[in-house]
Amino acid sequence: MTDAVIAERRPAVLELEPGEYWWCRCGRSQSQPWCDGSHAGTGFEPQRFDVAEKKRFALCQCKHSEKMPLCD
Ligand code: FES
Image (cartoon, rainbow, N blue to C red; front, side, top):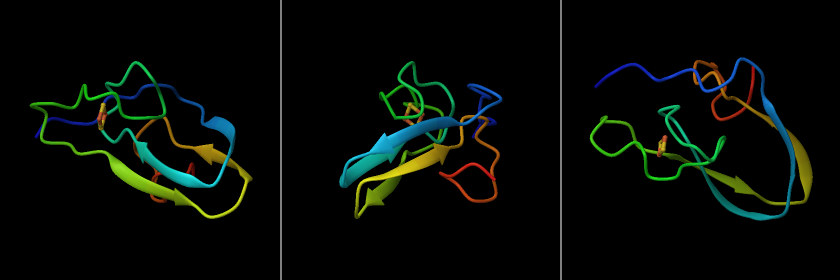
């Protein structure tokens, strides 16, 4: 497995509706912070992120947070 790519050095601050989301773990997605399938062949898998109520989140884009998928 290769290292995760740093997509951005700042979080993506988004207000999310309740639902199931798939956060990009590898950093290669062109649809940050979400998985677009670009992880194929890297050994990375996206991380599921469930949102129970509408809320604002700061999602990690450097891919090195200790609180993935949230920015730390
Ligand atoms: Fe990065 Fe899927 S594109 S985990």
